[in-house]
Length: 279
Image (cartoon, rainbow, N blue to C red; front, side, top):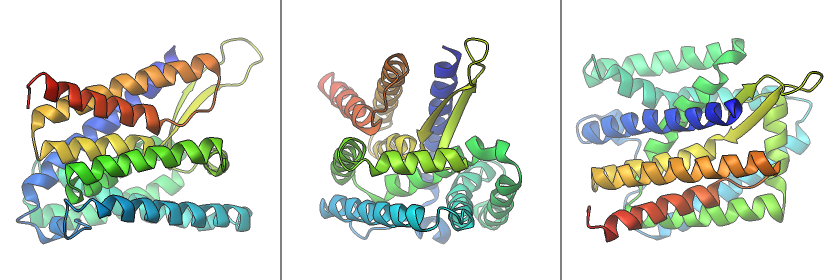
């Protein structure tokens, strides 16, 4: 139970940090060129954005699998990727935190410097793995959330869920990537640990990919710009569906894709709020 509570807390923390980051970025997007440059589409409401981004994900997966099979003995390649990911994505979350005190010019410069330091510290101190993954989750989720309209984003999440299912049960390359990331302890997952239940057993451990945390942040940020009440329903749907999912997986000792139930929970909760007349 302790293990499940720890993982659920990590998931909730990632969502809360993502919500705060997204709220700050939405407020600053029109006045800060640095923030405005984060938008990765010219037409947020174009449904074809969903197709473009899922193709981008597929290409990234192919590259990752090739790198794992080709450079397994050279983890420095992945350490470099991890450094760049943490530095770039966490700068957005750090910027949002700094904006509580400083104006956007100071926050922008300081966030870039601090994110590089933070990423370097992660390489030296493995204990920073979860913090790095959560900060990166908030940053990436916010970028997609402010870049895509609600309909294209929901389409993208549905496509992503289908891909997640196929990648786990059909091609199985997601399992291969997950095993590699866990083995090398890269910050592409968050990890919950607990003492063994019985003497002589190994330490208990659960890993959750950052993509499974980024997806809810994306939809939460996207709905925030539309109707904050809808964001509350998305948040509740994500937390409840993930809680049920992680409990089921732990009980059955199975490897299952997390995105399909999380996305389903968010969409159902979002529609429920609409049917109840909250927005």
